[in-house]
Length: 365
Image 1 (cartoon, rainbow, N blue to C red):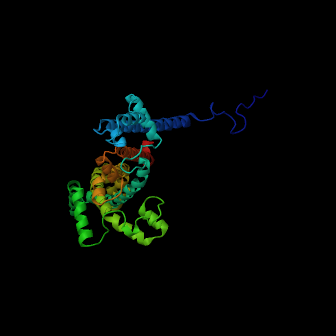
Image 2: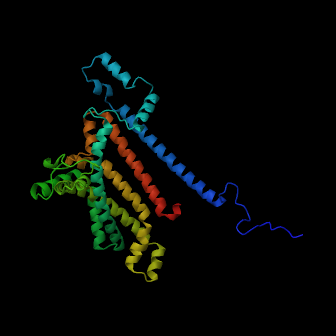
């Protein structure tokens, strides 16, 4: 008797494993899920730590939040009523849980200085800082990265010396002094740029708000006069921030490139007869993209939170000036709300750089 064909027709022999998915694919999926779970847990713990730090700061500051609400002439009964309404009579852990729940809902309380909800104030001032920091970072990247690469490729040459001096001056000079000198020279004497503020008085409020970024909003509205006015006001503070970003980025780019140019694969590429430009930009520069992205992300984050002096010198209505004025007025709701927003931006930028790291570097997968 002929034996039956246990394999059956072609393609219908051995059934797939139980579950319908190959074991190797399940293993890869499991690793990715574990990686995503680890990132989510790290993000949650970081945000929890940020909220805890801001909550503690709000409690240890020598400012009575109740008096800031009811005023110094309030009666004891009014003070006690506000004290209970703000939940300050509850245990400290309940106060923290309440604070965390309010922040997660986007409720930072009401600003004493402006009388508006802090979230509304932050939506108004934060785009101005984002616009300033973004333009400053673009200047730092577009000038700092090529400068650092060329300085490393021509180590010891005059370009390398210039790059090192630029970085040293950028780290050493006080930003408020450079801002004042820039205003005196380019605005007061030469008249090449606009003065303090984000716009001239004649254009204030004339451009409809779409994104909050005045350069983009003026382009969307087709108002070229408003765009030129806004650009004349932002070019000097953005260039100042861009210079400090340039100093940091060029220094780190030079350091990364020096390490790569001394590697064996670069020597091998040169021995094979590849052009110097291809060796530098096609091989060495590609290998520093991953750490360089982290440097750029950190530089952008530092400009978001570190532009306080620049915003004060140039009367720039951003989050740095908002937090400073709130701190001087004892407006802790505004101070803590701004701190949480800036800290969250740092966390988001770190997360973004980690994602780009995994996408650009196959070894991280």
